[in-house]
Length: 260
Image (tube, rainbow, N blue to C red; front, side):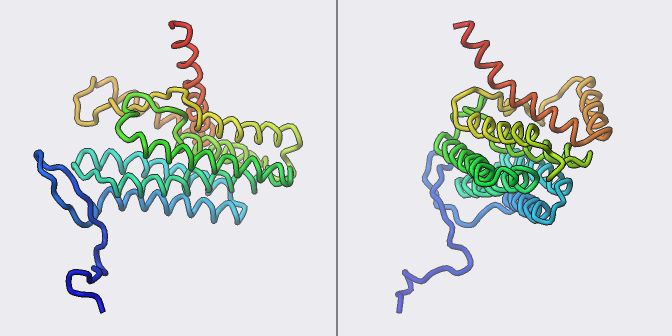
């Protein structure tokens, strides 16, 4: 029988030591709002997997869009409400492995790479492994990737695959309709995204954009214009934006190399 000092707290087992005004303070429990948003991202990723298994790749892509929205929101909410924690950072990365690693890999495999047999699932697994490695590296470098990320962020890589599958599925291209050439291109895309996640190519993080800071009125018009474009053809516009960001990393690397 454990002593009173050794009894387990069944309701709250998480605690961490933080620095408050130069003093080390033990903080117990977790912050509700940012972790709820992270859980919403995890649910969206799980729903994407279920939709892909059922052959509904359009719903799978929409779910990843929702996951990306919640994933982008949880960190900003945590910073705005001063509710950042080590637990939240670790939980966010674990959820990202599911939503932006496993879910897109399953989606593109069931959508078309399964026709390649073992080669198809090897490409899918390599993508999942790269996403996990990318997130593990991010966790070990917390605070050092403020202006530029080192490697393609896994949410963008996952979104690129999900929107790519969504865009082609929306025009009836999936399964046997792919053909060998498009299947080969899809496998190459999956492999390329896996490589971009683990190499040290710089990607702009957008963390310097302050939501609380005043912006020109024209900025509101730009935001409205972007939303209008997305409304016209969501999968096409989203995959185009994801592809442009994916290519921006190699472009930045080339420019920096030429300057040096």
